[in-house]
Amino acid sequence: GEKVEQHESTLSVREGDSAVINCTYTDTASSYFPWYKQEAGKGLHFVIDIRSNVDRKQSQRLIVLLDKKAKRFSLHITATQPEDSAIYFCAAGGNYKYVFGAGTRLKVIA
Amino acid sequence: DMKVTQMPRYLIKRMGENVLLECGQDMSHETMYWYRQDPGLGLQLIYISYDVDSNSEGDIPKGYRVSRKKREHFSLILDSAKTNQTSVYFCASSLSGTLNTEVFFGKGTRLTVV
Image 1: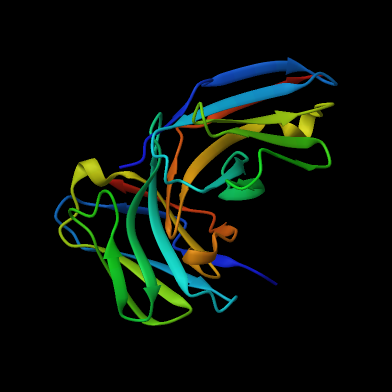
Image 2: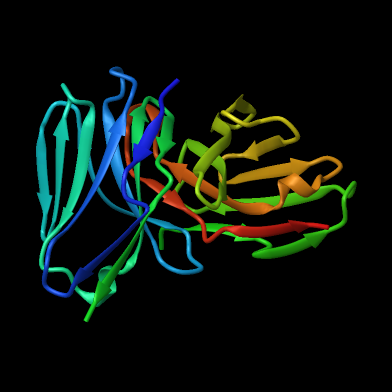
């Protein structure tokens, strides 16, 4: 089955800098790659996704890149703000089933 | 207001007791999920429900069962809880699993089995 590895367990950046979180997956059949944000004591909140028919998607300060050859995808948060501090989860899959990475704790330092 | 609601939010049970976790959604979503979250492991899928009375095991179904008698309601049952079932449980829903649409999560239930 699918396995998703999230490479950074923690990440600290200065406010205004960019943050990059990297994930790799194993199943070439995966076609959908969402990202979720979890703030302390709360559930997961969808932030952005990308489908396998494109290799880049941007939503305001968030950019997702997908490299299907390398089975790698990444979340770029530009011009980081303190409210970006949270745990970010990547996921891969499609057709009902999604496998999640272990999460990256992002800390934005003012 | 699009919401997934989980009850209770916190629960302490003794080993061997039965546990019922409830989840509701107000979006008429077809697909609902139960996950558990453990430190360093991310979210692990316990069960999927495709619609009323149409449920399927996820990756870690052992020790759990589910019930979905109404589209808006999905329950997770632990018969004779074990200490290794101490975790945070998340319910989620999506419009349709085949369309790869956004998954909405509840706020979670923190279950402690002592």
